[in-house]
Length: 442
Image 1: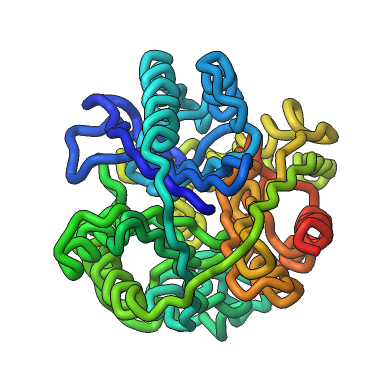
Image 2: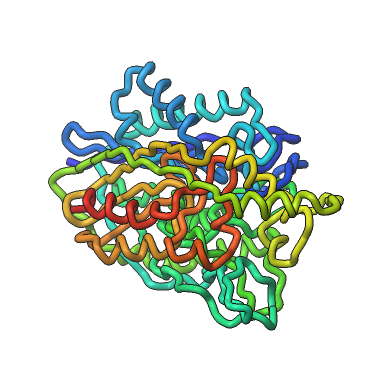
């Protein structure tokens, strides 16, 4: 018999705490909508596993380790069976130490861990017999490849709307949305949606869960009851919502609402036609995956020093984002030059270890964790190789390693290939990650 249990806790930060996602500190001035940690547990026979999803830009390996320690201390023995991931909202609190010159409030990190453990314990207490259903739909009208070939032969990230030098997108978009519903006593008690898109439509200094929060609210409006929705962000390191061929405003709260409502309509149209997923066992597999940092060349260091040798450009307090590189903004260029030198000193030649986790529901459905922000080609290749009908490829899971581009992208340009402290995986990370997860899916 399969059982399921859901719970959630509010993790909205206090006013004044800096938001993550851009290259400059952004102390928040208030809340547009609350942030949550959401937990969905599944039990079959003696196996307990599940998903822990945070409305954060990312979740660090250190935070996950702390939560696991607290879970174990409370007498629960399934912490290693859980996939921890983030929705990647860029209007959530900073949670990494010394990340782009800011550090989180230690009391908030304690609160975050405490409430996560509380939600996990409550989800366990809520375990009841459940029915699992799933489906796939190829309909993702809000996602675009954000890397473009330019007339000069290079690739540029976020080149700006209606830029006359754009030739074409560098690559494609994974348009598949995978949906799972959990039903108890004839009522849907949770929905899981795997969507390939960045979660950065608002900017500014107000706290928000971005379009995943608006999507959940609209699904509840459509269905007429408060169905919780866990958003699992797919491989979208090179995907975002900007349509560069249309000169429409796409950096505001209204855009989060538009996209959230749109995705909600797509998902709600499928909710009651999902197919039953039957299985006789749940299989959880974990493996260590080593991600070396890149080695920085003398030429790269020389170029970075040349940027810093130029007259300093005063920042005008606007958000420092990747778009600043495309427009040639001095503060953004200096930021990456500083990061290059710091990365060479702190990270170059070293390595990190991340946990890869797969959760298999029989031979029909799989959840697979991927660290950092993998490019969409990684998810597409894994789905192509997968023997499962329903594939939930979860990025920003089990820790943050930065962008994971395809090897060929490193010679083309774009800001995702630029090394920053604690980011910058080695150039062969993508194919190694594909092979490791292919073996785990077998």
